[in-house]
Image (tube, rainbow, N blue to C red):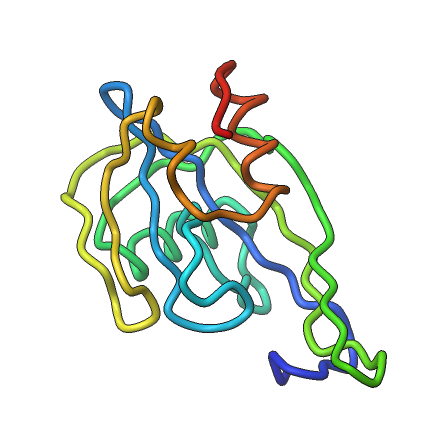
Length: 143
């Protein structure tokens, strides 16, 4: 299915990985959100369980092995073009994920990948939806 102008919503999965007071973050290399920072993730494959998708996507996007846990949030990402047509429509499922091994390195779809100290999250350009999720989950201001 096409990412742009899809006929049905797509499911995106991502992991909130915290290690030693830092959060695993990636800088998006493609739209939607090119250049913004986010938690690692991507599209769920047909026949794939959500937890398996998070584990695969985190590894593919930044080379880090994780064990996916509980759902932290579900949100809609709907972006329209100038004519009002839906250009992107994702249902985003964010899970907690435990770091198992690996150091972050950006894959082809990421501009950067790194551990960001919790107290430095406020300086990153990220979607409001994600900032609110991280504030709720981490119990701190990511503004």
